[in-house]
Image (cartoon, rainbow, N blue to C red; front, top):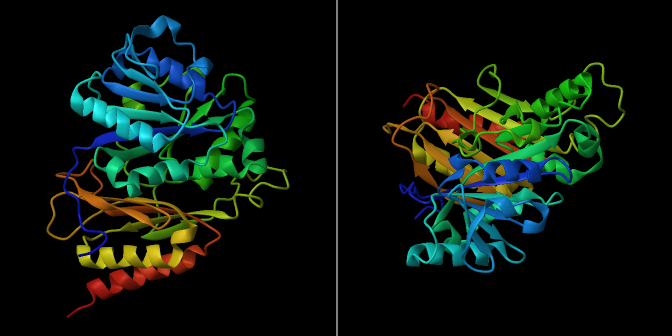
Length: 349
């Protein structure tokens, strides 16, 4: 049996990870979300209540770590092991001792690498039984973001792993600096949607929206690697594109025709065995022969989750779209491996 056997169950609870460097605006975002009635039915996991002003939102304390908010969502403090907290919360949900929830939002600390948090939903069977990773959302400060990307590897990884990049503080940032940051983020994470989020004003449906792993801009045919360098021709900073950007690469793969699952499965196994240690994240939609909808694939390092079969496509683009984020790997080798696999699949018999 393949380690990548398909998982047709899409009923597990979707999880959104919110990350971002220190001072980026995560607390403001979380506070706004917690006060939004659109968060009804969500579980929000934060590190400490003390950092977020919640007193006006409390309506009921369920135990020392859980409170039910007026928006209808549950808020949870986690000071220790996230895995144990998730398992405990899932058990309480099953037993009916806490209010039911249908989504989870997890806020990481400002210095956290989100990859291990994402991996938790891919390699712990007890967590995977109840939860599935939906998206990684990163808040980036328009005032300090460029410097943080230059000086802190954590900021680079947070941006690079994103499905959605929220650019904060554009109201107080220099317009040219904000534009340069936006262009640089587009190079670091071409797979991610980017949008402005001043004062945390983002609708919950955007945060929790399914984010297909499609590049944020159209790609020329059918494969392209993005080295993650600064795209601003007027940028004079000597470190732009040479410090952390050069080590973290984003590889976007687009393939026009459906492929046999066995071919894709074998290629994923090759990626895991050859480049797994350097693979920060893999995510994508795969068009599979004789299937009405795509398969959603996820991987972090050497851990790959069984693909989930969707009944239909989330948009009008029916092509295979894969995004790989790697560290210190030549994108050409991975692209060549995919080309070789698909060439074999489509060779005339």
